[in-house]
Length: 252
Image (cartoon, rainbow, N blue to C red; front, side, top):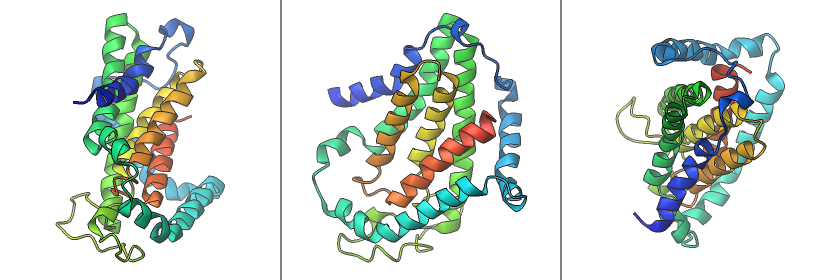
């Protein structure tokens, strides 16, 4: 692995290793443990799938409308921005560093290193944060798999450089329940799931939210020059990752 890739992996793990002991911020959030992880995920899924009931009751409709409206606008722009990323070679170096496997590994290493650091320091807040991050990623990937299969959007890389980027929905081939569609971005939803948990629980360190969300945004952007996703896929992945972590997992 190149030195630059190694630096990326270290940067993804820099947040957990740079946090102070839990005495600065008591661990007062919802209970979490290895035994409670699966029941928590089940409860989270119930909250996620029943979310439309909140809209029916007049709750959360303003932020929901903002996210959906922005996504719709980006979908309209996809046929114009996606061909650029499909054809350009300007991001060749960036793509080598932020390759799919590298960003996936970095996203996994962040909560793992946080959990290990918590064990070494005997810091229950770090351990619980890592478990909550893992719970958030599991919740996000379940929803992502369903949405990918439901929309079956073709990835930009599957289209010719000068192909029709406006007709991409319900066109992806392959078996059902594969989760291989383009909408939303799985890498982005996972990255923002982890980033939001860490940022919300360690917000007393002013640099943590900036670092966490910047790294997550870089992961999201990396999906564009790789032609793995459209901009609308990435935006929705980020919005869902943030929302699931904050409201379903952390319940803040």
